[in-house]
Length: 530
Image (cartoon, rainbow, N blue to C red):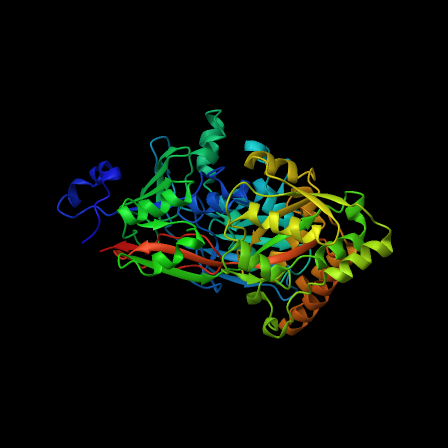
């Protein structure tokens, strides 16, 4: 019997008159934090993507549930020119936008909406480019402002992209969260009303759920979009109960106040796995938790120092001691799923004796370094403070004195984007199984502008390798180029790959149809309650 969620019982009143005899299905998801926007173009936050692009919006193409296979979405078909520079998408007919209390669409999806959604990010002179700050960090970190030459409407239902160079990653890029399609008609209405920021705060998309209420740090409430082009969701209502405390999320799951929870404490997994009322969806994640060296700091600009500090870190000890053994010690900046020969790789080298020798040979004595640790938990870095403390102790063993700083989250994000840190614990979640989309946003030269490159490292040779790989049509050729790129990263050591996580999503047994994604995040279309 489905658990009665007393805390949210009022939501059951939302059923329509025609549904009065049918129990209203309300799923409650205990998320960990508030989104920073409801426009995924403006964010790199998984919390924002969960709250916006994965429930409210659609993209031209998407990933098949539970996989990284690219399948049609708002575009029912596409063709690519022989030179690899032209992509033409034929849009699906009859796709409806959401109707809200402040906006009622007068037309279906057209090419105008797609052009608007990309032109806003691409064109600095576009009237919407600077609205809500105009960050577009994902767009810029992938170099799309230089890759996309133009996006135009060939006719009402056909969109044409012209690229400046071939890109083997372009289709996968269009499936990413920031490539969500917004309503141009809604944008026009908000601009006419002199309230443009409402476009990003009060979203209108084509996705399976519509936003109806948001209380920051408390809850987000959605209702099913009955005209959804794939068919209405099985859930009538979806509620995000924003619950930052891990132990409180766990207790709410046990009490039946939440059906699904985000990021359980690894220490709770044994109890969850034996709880008869709970199922645990498990998925090896396409992510990386890492320690980045700010190469703009004088001492860390010396590759010898970076290599020595890297050799001093025992990654397996960190996985075992700080993360409860849950995860895989990283030997590369790419997760195993993105490396065809990952099983043959040797474990990352740990050699404190050699680290001491390198520092002595380079003339460094009494070295002092600061480590910034995240004040929040992430799948790739669940216990950043403890990881930082272990690295501090491992560096002490080679004569390096390290201190640990834990700024508040806003300071951590804002100041690390401009390089205020010396070293920093951070991470990245790949949103597609494409190496370029994993490496470019955090290590490419273009990512310096977006702030996502926390190493503040720009290596023209590495960038050339990424460019060659994007242009390579042959898969084996691409893999060979990425192998060389990874060797370059190991040689230059702008960051230390620490861990690839294993994600666990606990859900109550009355939840059906939930599919864990290898790319992270939570998708509730297709989920039901019995």
